[in-house]
Picture 1 (cartoon, helix red, strand yellow):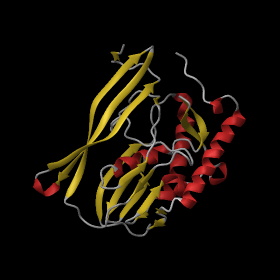
Picture 2: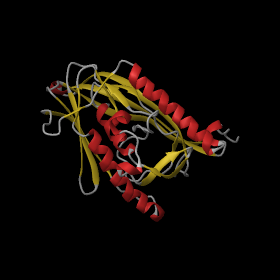
Picture 3: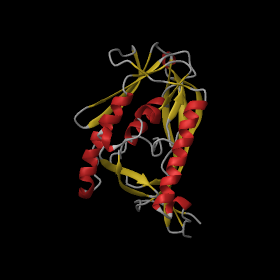
Picture 4: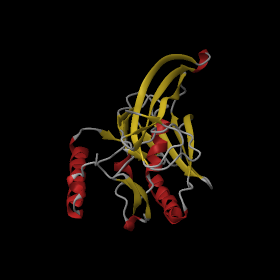
Amino acid sequence: MKKRKLISQYHPILYFLAIWTRRIKRRLEWLLDNKKYANNKRLDHKLEFRIKKHQSVLLKKLGENNEQLQLNKVTNLKIAAAKISGIIIKPGETFSYCKLVGLPTKAKGYLMGMELSFGEAKAGIGGGICQISNLIHWLVIHSALTVTERHHHSFDPFPDDGRVLPFGSGATVFYNYLDYQFTNNTEHTFQINLWFSDKCLEGELRIDAPLNYAYHIIEKEHQFLRKDGQFFRKNEIWRDKLLKFEGGRIVSTELIMKNFARVTYTPDRYLEED
């Protein structure tokens, strides 16, 4: 069955109006929602204790035609990372990716990079900066911070190429109505730091005091499916809370994400679904 188009897909003007309507709505929310947004950065000082560190590869093998877009993505990531790195999230504060990074534009130095839209990968200004929100989300779910807004892509465009994290564990952003937000409902202060090595975007989540617990992320029920001639991918992501000084004893387990997305390639193995 052919998927029905959204109204905004019929004409560029309709798409433009839909985007800006949503952006205006979000700006009004920022003014009226009574949240205290994190905006204090400490570039000269890191909080003492690290909760989690992670790195993600900058350049992936996506075909020769995408080589320049991949290189441009690195430029985009460095501009966006500079807006976030060092950010302090105090008790009661909310982290907003879009509010900190702002709208990616040519005037700010952003280049054409690859972005995902309406079921396909295409070039767009600032494309690729979701790699930062993906990394930050992975750090955050290893902590007691509360994710309050997260979006994920409705399709999976590329086969796994050295994937380290579970499928669907990221967080996509599109200024400003698809935001990534989390709130610090704890008594502790947190900090996000980002930096670049030769091949990777690197990041860490730090805290102002040692904790006697940690979190472990587990993927369950991963499958590829084919239904009505289309491929889909699904999984569940669970989190264990461990007591560090009691041999890693698990004190709680929770389901934190359930993913189901269309796949635009043919997987090696899949199940047929009636």
